[in-house]
Image (tube, rainbow, N blue to C red):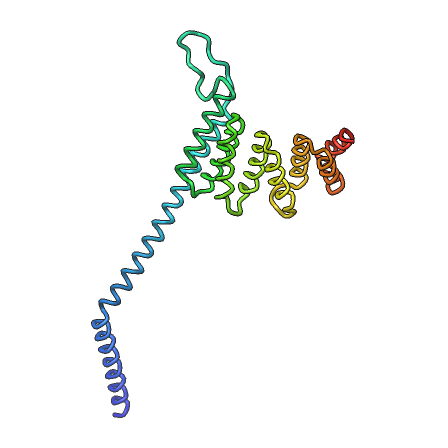
Amino acid sequence: MKSQQRRQLKQNDFASSLAHVVSTVREERGRILAVVLGVIVTVVVVSGYAFWRKHTRDQAGAMFAEAMAVSESAIAPAPTVPGAKQAAGTFPTAKARSEAAVAAFQKVANAFPSTSDGLAAAYQSASALFNLGRLQEAENAYQDVMTRAGSSIYGPAARMGLAETLTAEGQYDRAIKEYTDLAAQRDGMMPVDGVLVQLARTYVKAGKTTEARATFKRVVDEFPTSSYASEARQQMTLLG
């Protein structure tokens, strides 16, 4: 009898607990549904965003590859036969190729500014502008890359490009400052010996012989096994 009573009590407890759960669910149904819907929406949004990012990266990568193909196209003389067309995938001059490359890279940079391929395209566009002699445009483009590069290699690379552009423009003091700042970054991404050589060459162009010789000496003293060491020694001899 006692055993039956215990079983009855357990059954009653279970029924009571179940009734309490059912009652709670009914009372909180709206809130529970809201939570479930919130979870579903979050999953959908996160999955959609991940898909969108991958799709964007794939598109940017494909366009960047096409732009690189343009920049590396073969140079072939323009056909002289009347009615003949330029061979597909070739350009009659290096200038024509560079102009096409600028347009292709800028298209990627404008379409996908927040992607790594978009940033790389902006850098390549700046380089192509420099090669075309469109120095002011190249200067602006390099500065834009520096602003958006963050911690990527394109930051210091664009700074090197900017310094080279400033040198070509005859803005030696500004170029020297850029090279000097880069050379001070001993743990930076750019090889310091290469930066120092560019700095020394700029000093030479600026007519600052003493500073040029001192900088070439730094290359020899600090980087004796560098591929630039031989040039640095020769320049030191020429500068006296």
